[in-house]
Structures are given as C-alpha cells and as structure tokens.
Image 1 (cartoon, one colour):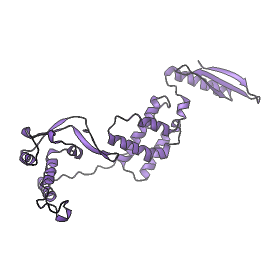
Image 2 (cartoon, rainbow, N blue to C red):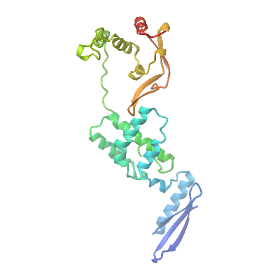
Image 3 (cartoon, one colour):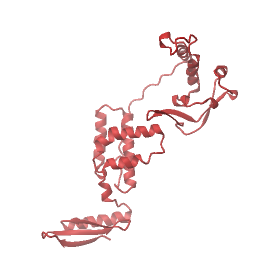
Image 4 (cartoon, rainbow, N blue to C red):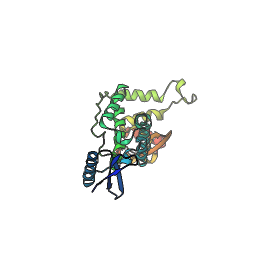
Length: 276
C-alpha cells in the first residue's frame, strides 16, 4: 500500500510525500504540492503494482540512445548482414531523431510525425518499414524491461509502394547473355592473351538461370555441394557482404534443399574440374 504523509519544508511550505515499495520491495518516494495530486498518484501506483504494470520512472528517463545500445547488444546472434543493416538504421535514422529523447517521452504522435518526415524526404516504403521495425524492436525491449507501459510503434502502419514488375529472360535470351559473357570484346577481357574467352562464365549464367539459385547461394557453393552422379546440388549456405568482408552464412530460410541440375550441364561441369 502507498502511504501519504504531510510535512512542512524549511521554507514553511506544505508538501505531501507518497511512499511505496516497488515490485522488488525497494522503498520509493515522490512529493507533491497538493494532497489531491498525491492521492491520485498513490492510487495509480497501487493499481499498477497490483496489475503488474508498474514502471520504473528512472528507467523511463533514460535516453533512447541508451536503449538503442542495449538493444544492439541483444542481436549478436543475427546474421552479419542483418546486424549491419540494423546498426545502419539506428545510426542514420533513429539516433539523429530520438537519441537525446527520454524513452518514456516517445509517444504514438511523435512516431507518426517521424514516419511522415521520412515519407516527405522521398524514402522508399520498404526503407521506412525497415526503420519502423527496428524502432519497434527497441521500444519493445523498453516495455519488457519495465521502462514504458506500451509500445508506441505497435500500431504504426506504413503504406506499401507499388511492386516493380519482374523481368524474366526466355531461353534464347539466356543463351545470348551466356554467349556474350563467354566471349566479351577484347577490351573487356581481364587477360587479353586468353583468346578462348571465358566459357566458365557462360556456364555460370546458364547454371544460375536453370537452377534458380539466389546470387548469394551461388557464391556460397563449394565443389563438394555438387553431386554430378545424381544431378543434384545441395544448397545450405549463402554468401553476403557485411562490414566490408564476404560472410558465409546459412541460407535465408535456414533450410537445406536439394536442387536438380539439368543433364546438359553435367559434362561441362565435369570438364571444369568438378568431381562427382
């Protein structure tokens, strides 16, 4: 129970002190100039403690930058590319806007205004959604840590932009591209003495087109992942660039899958030195 006590200051002013114990049984106090304010606060504290909704005022006064740092320490298990993206969003978009703001002062209206500002700059809808999602995760940590009661980003929506029409090459176009890559003009060749061109690059283009592997999955392939006798390629890792280095990580879905290799590629792959 919250206890209300009347006292007089050294200047002769009357103050009303509300003393209570938080969820950890720590003694806390807050003073008011009016008794009615003290009574309302005491009633609210008792209700929050009974419901388990009490928040620590001290934590609520901590700056957003502090909570952003705490949150970034929780994402060490994410893929390097994901961590780099999140960190970029925090430093480029969130800290300039909210860094010096107490976490408890960030409300729904402030977040809506922030989203509107991003839209006014012409930022892509996907970019704005990514920024919103990172902000939401940081605020969720503050909620679960008892710094704020509700997440002000929970119901913030971002309009979706129009989908770009995907372009698919037909078989003839794929072959034309592969042939051009195999035999580029001399000025584009890495080694002008290589008169035979680059047949391995053409094979790579056709392999990518007819297996449907993602770019990162293609880069992450190893010789032992190709099972030529069974005409299959095992896909379970991918390559991406993060922090200026090439990172080999699990596939996007974290699942291993077996993809068929067209029969016409088997001999060419074998000639390139790929063992069965």
